[in-house]
Length: 276
Image (tube, rainbow, N blue to C red; front, side, top):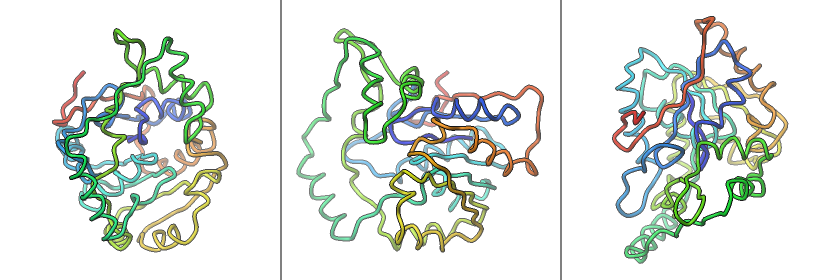
């Protein structure tokens, strides 16, 4: 099961799936992304709100064991789930280890801002005259994408209204989170992961260049393997072949290879049900 990154969608795993013909990948749209319904939020949100939604999905599928493949936010969520759910037998994580953090005082400031902004409305959608103009925004974003990757993500993450084309993700995801874990809490959570964790770091991404915080977190994992690849934050889309080879090597002793494997995209709504 594959969990994508923040403001991406299930199609972010299409390049990898094309390089892994003998691995069945179930890639889902996280709430508020792609074709899924928004995450149920009233005022403010934090990453912990995602966990019960994903847990209900695991319950509904009712597989005996799960291997989770996650990128960025999806990797963080996979790690948090593995700390609490014994059905998860392996984590394959791309360019993320633990969530963003804040101090105790910083979290109080977050709560204050959330209170002060209690009547504020999310920012309005931005509309584009053509779908090409829309996906080109991702080419020059915070984590730049090639034209091919940006176009691929946009195929599942755009809508068309009376005012033009727009990014379909839930605009509330752009709001500052109401609460973040402290670094001590993150390290304690990572220390609860009992299954093997295989981590790929991308050399040109912020995490790939990190040092002190990352080193402290790496030391918390009981069963860890670490690999490094060239490329930026979306290296799994831009140059999937070496990463796919690494994943295939990890899975080969544990996988049941089928001749007619496939990649599937699942839409997850706020109640954890499949909308398709």
